[in-house]
Amino acid sequence: MHAVATRDTAEGGHERVTHEWVARRVARLLGRPYAGSADAASRIAPGAYFVPDDTLDADAASRLGIASRDDLLGGVVPHAFLATKVVAHTLVDTAATCIAGWNHALSHALAAHALPGYTAFSAVDARRAYALLAPAGEVRLKLPTGIGGRGQWLLQDAAMLDAVLAQLPPGYLARHGVVLEMHLVRLITFSVGEVEFGGQSIAYHGTQSTTRARDGHAVYGGSALEVVRGTLETLLATPLEPLQREAVRAAHAFDRALREAWPGLHLSRRNYDVACGEDAHGHARCGVLEQSWRIGGATPAELAAMAAFAEDPARQCVRAATHERHGESAPPGAEVYYQADDPQLGPLVKYVTVSNV
Image (cartoon, rainbow, N blue to C red; front, side):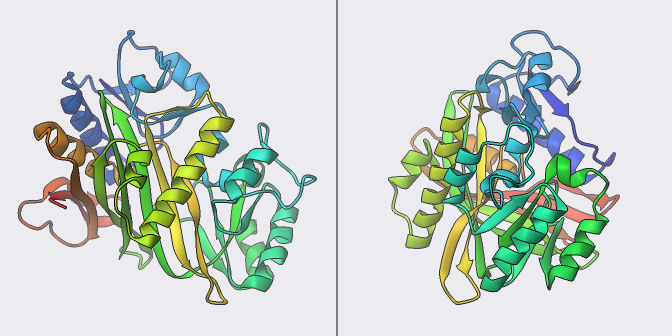
């Protein structure tokens, strides 16, 4: 069992340490030895299992010998942009600049389950998108490479949009694109997902929390999940509160549309962030923000739930939560998977808890 590092993360930083903790935990659940980190450019002996720190493209997966979702915890995509939030929205029109592999029909199908917004691959199209969205209320700009709540701006006006676009590295728009999306108030962000490996499948819904980083920014603070054995279809068949059901339905429809359009996707971990709140006119809105087909902030909770199910075959549901706190300590009884002075974020503790539903 190998971890696969593809992202440029800080030595001793929380992301790298968490990745190794996750990989070791997966190895334990599979009953396999942990063989350490593998280079994404190398070929490993057949039969190996992988835990990448990011979604892999088809070429990287092929080099590693990954042939199906049974070979990894995460995902493999034919085009890198499919793994980012840009797929959730349409372009401003069919004449807009787009990236190679863009599927107009798919973007329209997915937009039906997302918040009102647009994807843009040029500054001209980003300005057009802002002009279309601004009359309905505030607009949020998001970078597809942003993680944990960073790389986002609540735009005050068109001049601020131009200022943000001017900060982007040369070629960023054409390579990655940006998302411009309706801003919601009284927002609840749900995590909805399904994980399958080692002959076990779980599905869950939950909510995310935010915390304050050392620089004062509101960043990801953890996920609290209610987990069941089975699939998203199993989850939909359980009793859910109306808002929870709406979020799970949106994620399930989004997931199904993507996988039907791209049957070559290899996905063993599928997570969707779903936003429910109100627009500027007080109307309720609910839609998928983005998908995650790699290990993420909720992964330690997912693995803790799978371990609880493995220990008790009669158990059908469990609560599992991750917590990320800056300058604090973990409570007694929590399983800590990172506690140190992160090179970029300062003192940080990350831990997971499990309890009965």
